[in-house]
Length: 616
Image 1 (cartoon, rainbow, N blue to C red):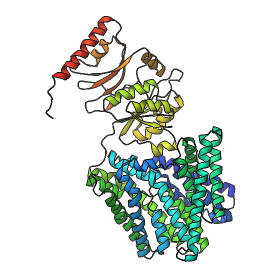
Image 2: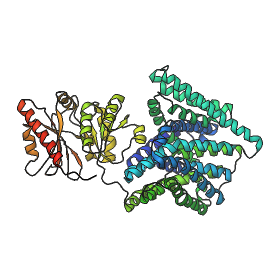
Image 3: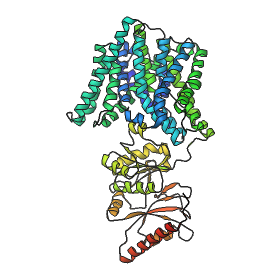
Image 4: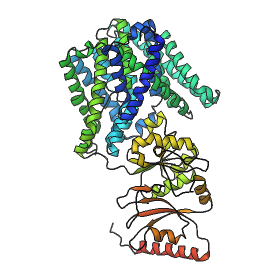
């Protein structure tokens, strides 16, 4: 591969894409397969030597790639999210992270693996979990909603905070801060990175807020500015570039009235490409000896991180809270390390090597060992542990609805009234706002984007109803979530201009033949309503349909064990006594129907009044 750089570059991109796809198919964090791929083609079979191929360009390439990754991560950090997700999450990303840094650093230093300064940097790196590794594990484990949300938001928030802590600590390690003459230089680096990053973030946010840039230039301008700020900051104060782009992202994410959704989507796509290339390249640089030397001490360090650092962090963060001990035990075990730890540690090692700091290569091998150990071990054991402790979520009964049009909103509202967990997703702010006003959980964005993989909370969700007005989105959503929920649990609606010959994997077709989204929307505009009827031995599904003269359109049924069964062309259930059936029914058309409806309502009100009331 080294003899032909073009071939090597193409193969690395291809291997990265294959590893990303395989990780999606296996429901494993992509970083694990990327690192294994790099180790195989590098020290394993010695097919690829990054230093020989890239030469002096390796360091600039890695530096710029890590700068983009850190900016993308920091762009997701909103301070209101730290305050808005409970006391436990706030503690985990502050005092909990600090305790992890100290315990991991003391372990690496006490075992003689690293000097104290580099050990402290190692502690900062392994304190970061991150959504790219935690979310695949959560989706495969099926934790209780409370525990899953704590882990999910810890990963989202600690990602940029941990990177910022590692960058700051690195400044003290790279420049001997113990020397009073160098201490001023450290603060100069911190000041330059902070001021330049905040200034660039504010300036770019001002341009976006005033619509100075056309929409199609937002992504390109953001990328250009990130690279420019990184290089400029390094020129002003050596090694301050990473701090500058991290501060720039955090500042931009927290500015009022600045929409960074499109920029974030673009940066996430770019980050997938960069991480695929970077991790293969960086893993290929590691010699096998880095993983075999001092293996007893390394194993002891893994034990300290797994069985002391993480449990202590959870204990400190959950003390004097009502969180059950079983959930605390699961939280103490699940803490896989991810992208920030791998990317930043490799870059720091290159820089520390140039500065002559001892232990730089050991820093990378230890960090990669922590990543592989935690991801592999916890991916395999988290689900059995959750079941053993009784904190695994039962069969998910919630529904993800794609689309915010009137039909989707009406179905979501009816399910919400039956106390089902419903998430309505749409790219229209106005449509999602209407759903939120109705008390329905919403996701503003594209459900098949990288952002959805990071931010869309699917805990407790087990069905997909693709009700969008866009046929391609419905198809992609069914393809994407067929592996998440199972091909039998993804449904799509007919559209008037869509062909019927669609593969089963693209979603089971909703409702009876001839029922399209356009038809349902027209009926709603005519005053048709969704009515939920409870079936009995005397009043079954057939009688319910006959009462509506056969005009009712069955939408979904709810079984006695409270599982939603949408009506589809290939219906695999039979509604019986004790079930509830939701039909779209026509409004009363004459006086008799109106009187009958009024009598039914009056009878229901009377029954409600006659129910015995419990004493206060």
